[in-house]
Image (cartoon, rainbow, N blue to C red; front, side, top):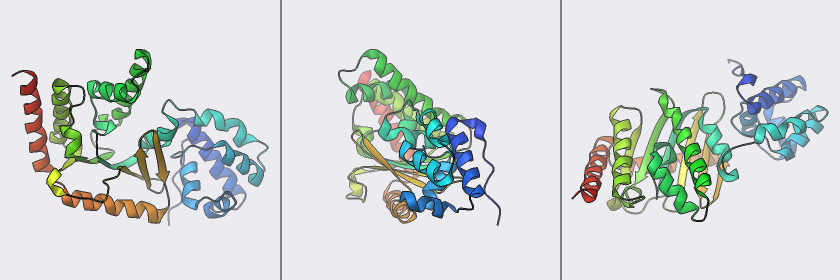
Length: 279
């Protein structure tokens, strides 16, 4: 069986901390499961910290120093490794996207962040924070649009999105913004950069009616599931829980329109929005 993939500590403070954690754990002769046990976390969670997929929280850093005898190393370096430009509830998920090999996402009420245009993101962020200063909205939009740069690579990661028809029918930012947003999705789909399916209204009830779910796969770490609500979100790494949400996603893809029919619907809706703005 091949050993764990070599880590690149220079890629980020989080990766540096993870590489040192793996080194000290192996030096102590502990498995990931054994190190996780006194912290009441899984071996998978330790593996995600070591690979830099997840951020190390201070409470864990202090325990690692205690267990591994590292004289405060992890606590001293934890703060720099956990700084993020994203909201706390979303930071780990957003940062994990950079390391994924595949993202499968269901969006119920809005276009997924990785597929949003600047104008659409502006409308969404303004709706979230009605009283925020324009500078703050610009910052949020910039960070959201920058996340989508992972799609600049022509082949990876795989992005497979199932979008509820409601998200495409909700006029966010006006008809012109919606026309541009849908054309952007259609362009990515036509270039075979993403797979998009629309879950139509007539599909009826489905297992993810109460929220959104994102599944993330990695080359060197166990998969994660991210669940999001209003100003809240959580990552799940328990294998049985992730498998449970993967089944949800597979059921959604089975109920959704095919990629070809979805593309035709998205392009037709884009034309409808364009005609609304220019009758």
